[in-house]
Length: 380
Image (cartoon, rainbow, N blue to C red):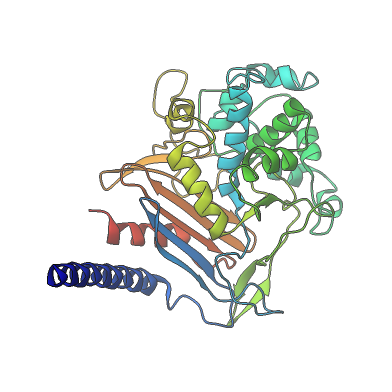
């Protein structure tokens, strides 16, 4: 009996050691993708790779800023840029869940002062980038005193974006007839959340999403109101070095790109999506259903001069706050973020429970390409 017990313990220990070796090998292979992208004294990136809720890689590379030179780790907070849109979309969906809002509700129901062209724009149009709202950055440039009015130190606020949109007599196209990626739409969605809930957008996110999920270091940053803990600052490559490019005149808007988060908290966000902790699978379905145009056709990337994407004219699949597509036979929901000093990507392969998150505080790294490289090494 003793010999059998010893044999069982030996085999169990052998299996554990083999499992640890396999996991270590996986981590080494994944880490090799990122190892030479930066050095210990330069801005860098944080990487999280999870499969079925198990962490395969969670690693920081480089430093948070060139003053402190603190090492990037799993608790370093990066500006998510447009990866914020998934949180804005969920905030709207929670209001729909509570019966306070409808997807087909016109913008003018929420903002009665909005011009007549807003009567045909619905919340669903805003979520799916089919609203036709003018790009607020383009409207800023059309303003005669734009360069004096909005600077890195005097940034445009959400209410000012709304005012710029209200000065227009029409949108770029009739709502639902075309698709054009719209930061204006998501700024407006942030304002919708605030108006309908009666709470500032940043407070609603904190109380209804971040706190319930234990995302204690994630926030929508409002200068003078809250502080980003363990903050990474953004940089751009210039010659052989880097210059700090952390803020721009448009860095204060919230719904389109104002959230900061880290790997530790985003793992909790990934779990919440996987386990339906905020919304049921049925309630999440609208976010994961590709938008169709009013005539039933598949939309294409806009070729509008304001839409600076190289995919112009190609088919696009978008739900609420997520791009949706088939990647090498696997269903993927993903988003990228791009703003001054930061590049981000979050990709979730929903049929294989694989998640890849890459957050960069430098603009010469392409997290979308790196996420695809990681995915190819794992999915079959």
